[in-house]
Image 1 (cartoon, each protein chain N blue to C red):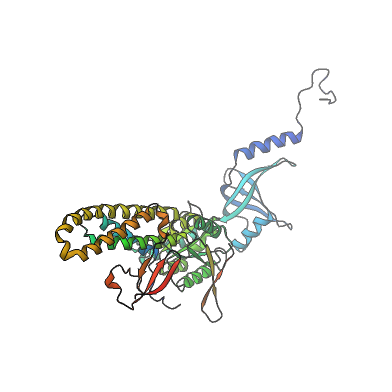
Image 2: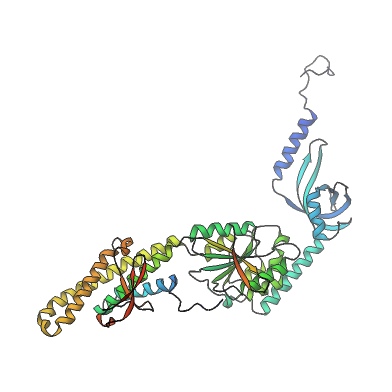
Length: 387
Length: 78
């Protein structure tokens, strides 16, 4: 380092530049506080600059802390509070301790200000609503309805362009596309959200052939989830005539709508997993039925064949026709057994006669001359008539 | 929307009935005529269930309230 010698002829001490010091200090401070904190104190020296940024100090009995709230967040806080905060207010400030390198100034970069009076009022309101819902039995566990095992039409009450809907659609497509999702768009946060959700839930009750209803939204700040704690929304949800799933925010967020719904899901994706049947599991189940059907009949016909062989000789005369009919049914069934294995080739050249109600016509007596019926073949059915 | 006339059995109906058919078929005391009838019905239901499971079209609709107060469903791009 080539600095003028102030220390005589001796070695110069290693010197840091100012920027280096500030850079290290910044890294140290911001390295410790990686997540935003809530800081409790009295707000003083509040100053809103024309630029829109807010500067203020938080203090308590022992210390004070400079804070800055950038204009974007300041605008949001202004809307929520209805007015800029004033000096002397007791508040919770959310923010991260940061260090401004150019000036070497340490301060809290805030993202939110919530007066403690508001928190108290909100907690009281939440408790009031919860108690009211409970008094009317809406939180009663015996009220909970089970979800349909194979829902075919599911209403989704959420923001039409939110992350929640996107997640629900993705999960649904991965599980079983043949389900129909009916989106009932609603505003899920901000002024008007409560009315919008109540209206949407009213519409849900007018959708025909509905099996279940999901209500929810993606994660957000506590205030953004507030509509799901509102009494009118909870009551409208309780009045939905199909089983309901509430999925509000992240796993850790629990809203009153979660308590009122028949089922609470941790996230919108989880709600879709609960509501939409899984095709893979169903295919396994159906395959299992095919195997058991074939095995069950194979065992049963073996027993019957042996018995027929024994009794056939004795009763050939009198019961010949009956036995023949049974034998031919056994043979037909045997052919079906072949068709069942492998199971996928059921459709190969096989047909079933059915009446108009879909009942299988399997006896000669079902076919009086002139009788009309339908012959079900691999790709549909054809009208037919007995000669 | 009007009530659907004689509803086709749903997948749920088919699965429930298949479960019942298989149970009865597996019971030793089933009469052969009954067993055959059960098996034949089972085959039909099995095929119907497979057909339903093969349906693949994803449908995402959006509710719109029309001027006359009725509800309509329109496709939602998703």
